[in-house]
Image (tube, rainbow, N blue to C red; front, side, top):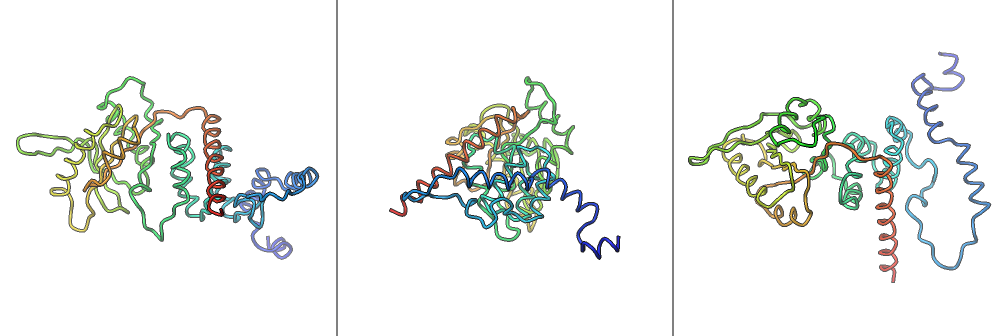
Length: 310
């Protein structure tokens, strides 16, 4: 070991060498050189018309613009389509190591593919919070992937809740590291009426209670009103000194963006609606949809920049 270190220097441990081997297999240098030679041979002469290049093309090292640690993190992603997605988004959005790790850990690829508003999800990747600051929108995933439940298409909201409790460990992993489970079917009494909160969690970084309402079906404005009642009660009776106001999360199978906007915007309580999926569709379809949305965003960006210059 000492002889090899004197000869080659530090940084050549067995683990590092294995990572270098995997890196070469995923991003072969020989292929890169041939691609460059081919590109030079077939490149047409540049016309007088101005060509708008993407930010990735303007990077100083077009083939390996990320840091070595970025690539080590990417190597841990076994799904090739997902790995390519994270690599592209890390370049496009300028993710730090911490941000890349956060996006991988939160299954950003799967959620972007499942989202009905992929453009918003891709645009969200460009937003960064200073330091450790977090927002509810960043901490609450959308959509949730509940494949681990393995329940049939025909199920009730009660059966969904029971399945989530049976697979609580998997559900906590899906929610995120900062969620702590407090209880289910927590009762609250208002005058002579009794109500029950489906699930109650606490979020450590947001420092607030999270009231979760499970819904099999489409989100409606009535769901927002019911959650508003729960949160007002929780703020008065359940919140402890030093905690932030409680937040509501409505998990539904479908939501309409316009209904969500008008039902939840400007409420005194913070309420979010998120969809849940019982299984992922075909990966090739997901990847093609993401790629199509990304190209549309790039075209829109080029058109916007061109209009600004005029």
